[in-house]
Image (cartoon, rainbow, N blue to C red):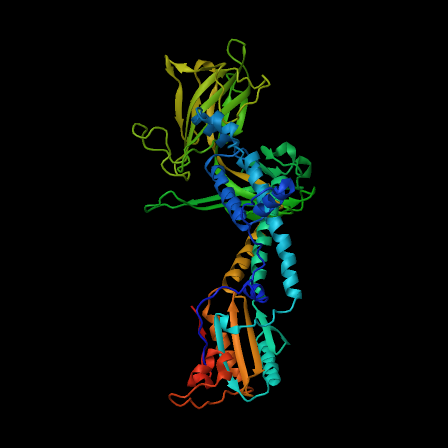
Length: 586
């Protein structure tokens, strides 16, 4: 078998089979800018073709990726509102501009939604016609063999004494055995394989569409609640016990799942030596939870970082940890006016925790005036030996040598003013800082130590500390849909990249010399040596039904038979009778 070599040529416009041979994709063709007067409807059609084209879809996908960057760099309105407030306070100059550009709620902004919707429409407009076209391709028969097989990128031919119909039947059987969709007609066999490539393309597009649906669904039907829970205390997923709640159009406080849990204990473990000393190694919240309204049916579980507790349609995430110093405040009459833990919020990796203890029900001072007390300072899990070089700063995140550093205020906390207040910050506009001999009154307390307050305000005792943990209760129904879409998109991409769609034709006809001319040709969707290898294997297997015959070489100087002028160039060589691997044309 020899290879008929031809130079690369475009498809013959006069060949009715040329278009069917060259086009192996169902991707919509992209047109140029229209010229002339096409009218309003014509422009709409052109705009629709552009919007549903591949290049515009890729451009919109790229713009969506760029648009999501500010949402990752700038704190977003949501569960961590304190971080947004802190960022605005630190960047007061550009905050008004960012607010106008909707950069504090990027994913619900009008410009982000516009890109999102355009991408959604673009994918839908691309998928629907492409799917119908692919269904039509599946229902149709493989295109018949082109008139001139020598123009195919891979081609081989040989002569045989076998019956042409028997050769075509044998080729049809071999191709079917190899998984090709093959048909016999007009003296040739047409076969096609690799439809999973286009299935992969469609799966990729459908998956992106599904991914967008999942993200959109999560945006309109999700909600997030946060809660700080002390050791030994519990939480019920109701409006009254939630610290912060951020719902959506289709998910509000009335849609919260009925459950609750108790925080039995919190385990924190840190690296104690080496260059990573102080690095967190374990955060585990030991809880007992219940589902529904019956809080007596408890189940034990643990919540760790990135290992949430899943209850119904909600997930409980562990997002923070800290300490709550326990103090007891007595007035001048030695009456307990405050006793219990107060959470202090850490500000660095060593858990240096500033905070405020507010005593709203102190009573009256020595002059009989109604007053309130406040204590502001730091809880240091591991206090330094002295503060001269470090100041009030913890040296290690674990509570190895806890200390409470405080100063005191007296006056009106303005908690009854009706204005919202941050429980972790002190509004000192109506407060007076207590002093001793003209100096600010301050104290450093170890566990068990007390402080005699100046001006006969009583005493404060540092009784110990408790740990606390912050949890986020997240309800995002679209996340699973988005995950399925992402995984399916990867699978579709793999299929479209590694599966080659290809066509093979076998033609066996009786030549002018009475012998059977067997031609095999192949066409791949992309450049691949696999087509030539597959064609060679087919030619070798056909030798059992259509063995190549040896031809005597023409004597030197003899005149060739004019009848062979129409035969393919494969017969020009004496080696034509011996089938060999086809050559891929370049």
